[in-house]
Length: 332
Image (cartoon, rainbow, N blue to C red):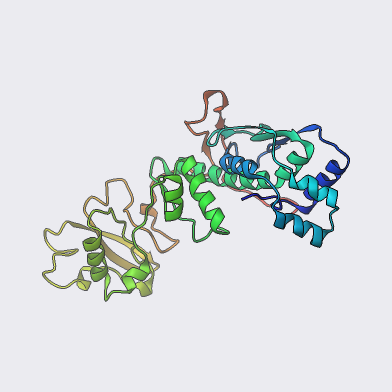
């Protein structure tokens, strides 16, 4: 995608003024974070690949120039200069996945001032968003304590392109898989996912749904979603027909688990043996935000911890943070 118009209008205005006055001297634009918020001791660099792809394809199409002529009234000599403009500069950047601290440049561009000016907006967009995502993903990996994490953000990201960027940035930070099938194909990632509640509701009961899924995908490791609201019901032995060899039957290989799924609503649900390991939580996707206390193994908060082990030795340093915060005077 050429991307000549993928910029803020004031960037075009400044570049037009430079070119009109033959200001072609070299300029260096440096992207860095002056200071990190309390409790945020490091960043994980990401977004470089998209920046380089943008710079490599940068140009103005005839349609771009026509728009600038008709809608913005740019002079013909400026449009001719834009038509021949390509990025000819140099890029110095921190490799993606590297830990970066405040004051350290993530990316620097040295180019004729008009070229560097026009590239600023998109480079800020790619690096800022993807670095934020990769940094948060790294904190999740630290907090998970060795558990495998899956990016399931595609349905919530702000746009299709953002969904791809999140899948890639999460993988850079150590996530094991993504639910985004197109992103898995594009970036060579593992795709992960089983079934949703709608699948269970499409059948007569849980047993029919679980059986159908197990028959259709016998080799897939499955984490069943267990209902946790009073109206949802529970997969108790009474819900399964006699002699079916399903949960609660002798020799069927299921283990009963008891927890209060809602205040005053005790429930007994069943899981395959091997899914519940001593000292660990069951492999279940809780549908309630109030999961039982015993299901949460000890873990490090994403607000406290240490620089990742994969940080280079010269930049590794211990960092700590409070687990609470108060708004600043401007309300943020």
